[in-house]
Figure 1 (cartoon, rainbow, N blue to C red):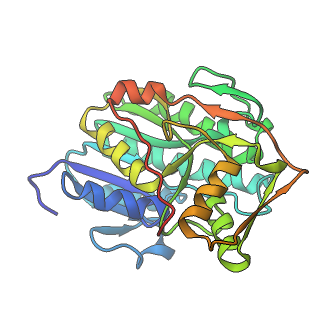
Figure 2: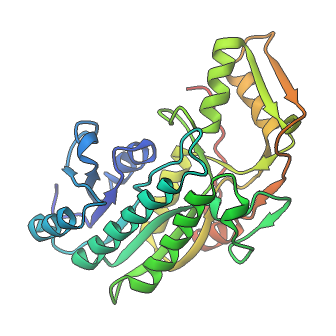
Length: 294
């Protein structure tokens, strides 16, 4: 790694978003990629295998790393719920352990900034417009234990970050893009479209949420690292969208002419619009990439 550039340490670097974010950071920063030992072969360079949930491993790594001054620790490592595990308490436990590891790492490395990737799962799934001062209610979210762990991480990192380390919490919208996990919504819909030439939407596709392309996540992180402002921000697309509009965009990009969108009456219809204006104003960045063609 070139010593001329500021150092950014990224946890979860071999994950879906990490694989998009790290290459974008490379032109402006020295990037130390921290990956789970089981993913150590997935990233390209400057990779350090570390079990973030193992306190002894974190302590040993911090002692041996010898990084010198760290501009930012970007905490992206997460244990996603996966299909059928949305209400599994083990999801909370796994993410809480990762938070403790990130906090221990921050205390050892003493970065100038700690950028924590949180989630819209901290908000309830119900009609409304949700900004950063809105109601926090993970129990009313379909990914309740994940949302609870993410909100707890926001609070713990703010409370316990070392003196002199500023904390930025980014509540990430539903991310999508090349290489996304098979259980993420856009991947599920795209797979049905490829296999059956249909997209099935529950709640007749009325549900509204916020989606962000992985490239926009990388662009947003670059803006944050260039001029960090401590605080909590919703990080998503400038426009919210309904599931039916999302389905038709997928069909237009990837479907055959006779593709069908099937509207199933049962299911969630909540219109959860996410207000992303705070991030847009603070960082002078409008995020609106929409690309389903990969």
